[in-house]
Length: 192
Image (cartoon, rainbow, N blue to C red):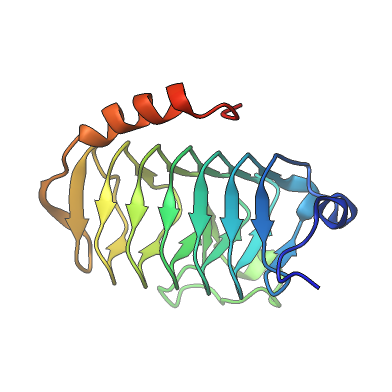
């Protein structure tokens, strides 16, 4: 038996939609599958958790989500094409209020909590380093590189390099990859 689900098995799981050449580990976990859309040429590794709330999760084309990563929350999460998520990255579209004014946790009725839910948008060619955390309401611009162990709690501008806790701008990322993409897509017969 393969360590990845077959196309027939992916159909049975019940994803909203999934494309061609999708490799999903049998050890990954999915919740709200009817709200998860997966494009073409996607790999999701062992022990990943994708839990789609009402906003849903959309995963574009040519994406890798490495082992132990998670996408969790009630808000919409969008991963555009060519995004790379390193291992142990956590992307949250919902977050508890830590102030102590209200209670926390999913087992406490909503009237006693103050959960923040907001869209997370990760644009094309973003790479997020190992162990990083992305909070609700964040937009990570095209071509951004987020260093390992970073806490992203503010938007990141295109082709910036961000790292730290909280993540801050530390440099500019090269844009040569856009030319590489153009050449790749011209020579790749199965891009749609």
